[in-house]
Image 1 (cartoon, rainbow, N blue to C red):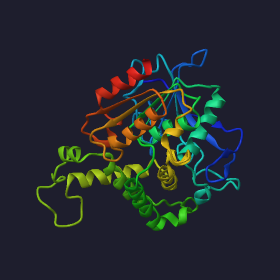
Image 2 (cartoon, rainbow, N blue to C red; image 1 turned 135 degrees about the vertical axis):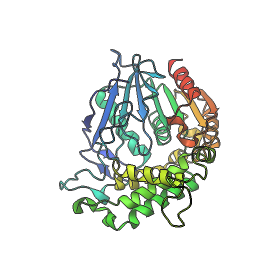
Image 3 (tube, rainbow, N blue to C red; image 1 turned 90 degrees about the horizontal axis):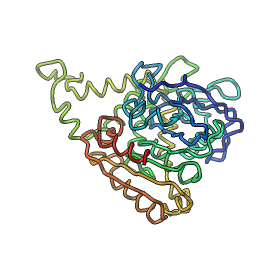
Image 4 (tube, one colour; image 1 turned 180 degrees about the horizontal axis):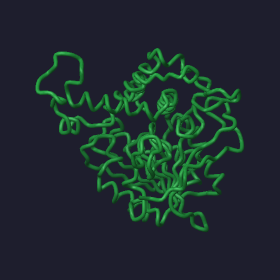
Length: 366
């Protein structure tokens, strides 16, 4: 296991400008680091987390007690080797594990709730760059991320091209598709339809829209898996019974699994943060941010790129990564690409896929 610094908080010295035209004042970013920073600060790697992730990259989560979300990838002698690299992972603006978000106190000392400004992935990256500035790190050895983390990695490369020498984007996209926006909207509507949501002001009522957030998580979790993986793991097997109940209890193992995922999620995540972060992902479109042509977004980059996709990922399928690769080729950027075979769907980047380990280590150390 990697030895982490205790989670720390960095107070941004100036208001954070946002794409929506507002500025977020007095914002803080929670982060952890692993491994020693070299004297020349040239060995820093920024790892960006996915939608429901956090800064607990390779250390136990303080709420659930579970291992860090990428502990298999980060640590001494692992593909992201903390004996060689100084690894930084920060909770994004808008989230709920210490960085400023909807549950944080606003200027009136009351939770922002729905007064929190709508943010974008580029806003999240601005916050991460402000953190790097505070740490005195001018140029990263690499920025790495999967899913929404990959969006942040690509956004950093496009908007702050001088800040990273390598960009590793895994199971991700350069813009959110209509299908993905649709799935997110189902989740948001489930939360907002919960009477305990109270127009987002549930903090003041000592309630939370747990039922709605649980359904949102269940719907999203289906998209992280593959049909083959679900069939192999659950099939149509019944849960703790010999026959169907002819009712609406969890007759099937897959139903029980989804309910477990949903209820567990409500103990560690804020419903309003889920609304804001999914909206940020839906607004994500790097080409749109740069005049409509994706290649133009990377024209000024001197970084090396590596894109990785998985053959069973239908949330961000291989075609999405190929689209980015073609744009990078058009921009003259050095880029490598690989589609890996794995049975786990989109979540493959978090699970045991030895081929991914080799790609990550080879790209970072090469």
